[in-house]
Image (cartoon, rainbow, N blue to C red):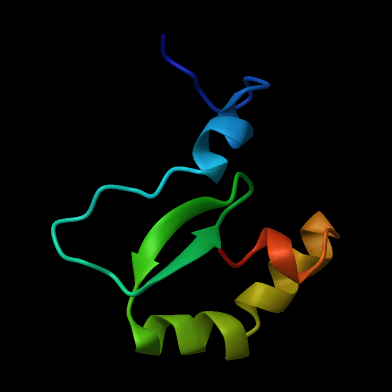
Length: 70
């Protein structure tokens, strides 16, 4: 079965699944409307948190801190 964006199961399916990577990543950040996780370095995490992107998604989603950081 293929689950595409817009399907009611899409977000729930991705919520507990880490993306495949060729290198281990110590951090994962959620980006975009569907909050798909992607690997991030410490520098990328700092930019995400302090560069305004985290605040933007927190405002858009309105669900609090726990929805954006796993």
